[in-house]
Image 1 (spheres, helix red, strand yellow):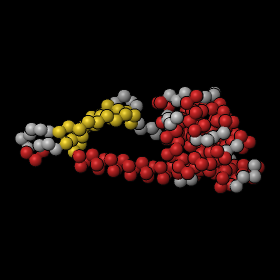
Image 2: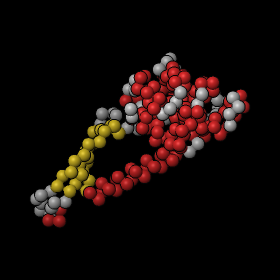
Image 3: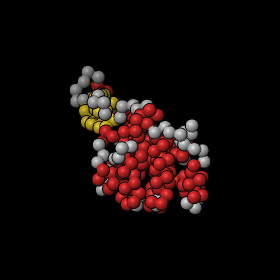
Image 4: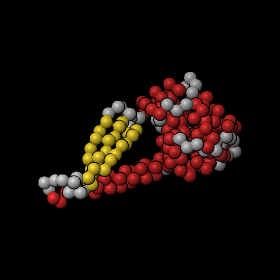
Length: 207
């Protein structure tokens, strides 16, 4: 089963998806606790990942990767609230990504437990949310009669975008402008994915 959440996680995590199967219950809890503290804007001790590495005898590079994956899962879930992700759907998504059942249960207990409201509040405080595009409808219009002869039979793209605020925007593009828009969006998505994959651990804010 492929869900919107799963596609988002696969896209953002990239190669880090492979490390999910390596995350074990014995050390996932301190990583979850650290991610929760970061999102809730609580104090995070400097060098905590290094200490986790030594305590569980795991290379520090691997700990960084595991933490980045856990943090990303929590962050993307919290930003996907519009889609009302149900607990079963969330668990099935992580199963598809090969996370162990024990780790899935620990993450679920945090996301759907009493910490949920604090996590959402912390993420909202540290993030400026812009309206999110949730659907895009389009059609091709062809002018068959016009006073401007060079526009006859020239196709135009009419697009309707709907945002999570309920706002609808309708606009018309020439075929050339449509291809420019498509190229610009594809470029932005590639750059965003590269940015999100670049050592997410560096986003931790130490007090």
